[in-house]
Image 1: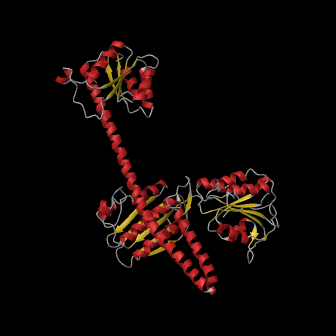
Image 2: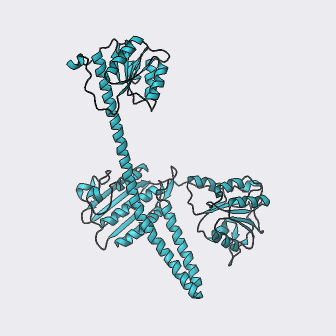
Image 3: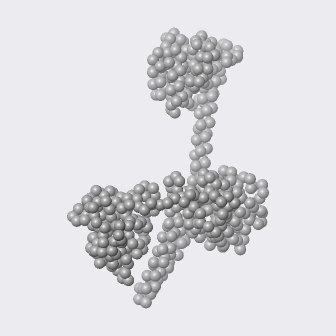
Length: 549
């Protein structure tokens, strides 16, 4: 629509310019040389940086290279018409923010509608009046500047939000690290104490063995619990709710002990949910840590319950405390981002960014669930997470990469086993345990490949991560090309992520360090005897069964 010009505009003066970090850049696309020169002089006189193009192809190149703030675009131009130029500019992510004003003598309503449908931001009919041209140019540039400023502010806000989310995670990780350090110190204290006693008095050696095995299992449970925290999982991952709750509680054991709080678990059932174990674990961690912080006196208790919901297709995860409770005026806001009564934002003594419960709600909602809270001041709070049950999925047995290569299953015979590990203290016990069989040990992947090139092996016990050597996954791919190829058992301290799982699905099995020798014997198809050196078992009818731990 035409606008009424002010006296200064009628005199040809430019409207008051908004502050610019650089002169606004305008691209004029016009095939009429006289109109092009006249428009160029008018805009240059008002301190705009002016670029020109005389056809559609040149206009598209200039816009992509110079990224002008505004394009004054004639519709009837050679090669590519103005409507198509506008469509392409608005379709490209790099140029869609450029303002486009159609300047044309085709002034019917249909022509203008066609231009706006192509993505134009404004329209000036030919012949144009200079004050109107300057007013529309100024208006478009003002919109462009405001849009750019808003986009920049949104980017800054997003960065600030991401920083705060990271801060929340780091605070939780700090608590977990303290708890893990505490637990491992206790584990090592037991082993160290009995080792020192055994050195002085041989009578304690048997007790040292028992303690070492028990504490090793305890350490393994702890690292397994920690491994699910904040680890990416494939979409559609199903997790065991009861196991995840137990993992989370194990990680906050130090906080519970320090606070003098009792934690009571009631696992009425053990459902599964289609949700990342790391996300569910983070929900439990946040709710339990909040409950601990809400209890400010002795005799505090936290009850974590998993049970059926009213809807049979759902279950309830409930965290209840007898702490100070939440004031009624806060209940409607506790899931809002950045709302907190802790730390710098909330004026409390404990650290907090106000994002913990927001993350909980987002994780729960993304899994198709809901989270709700009931609380009374002085009596405590109850958080109820209601989630849909996952459908039970059948698991298929893994296939061995070595069964199709022509090597017969190892029946009741002496096995040839290659142990590949760069740690001597790992190789030596295996060599001693399997001494009734032909065992070759290598400390590098290269040496392992050389050994396999000389003669075939029934099994290769293969470390995944080796220093100063090709890694186990690379060795595995080379071994798969041999004929016959050995059955590969991976041994590592690495928890199976999606990339690693791809290899495990083609291997004979996986042993998570530290592992039990009995588990290794099962993968080798052996029965553990009373002492070192398991006895071979006859193969069952139908061939060898591939099992993975």
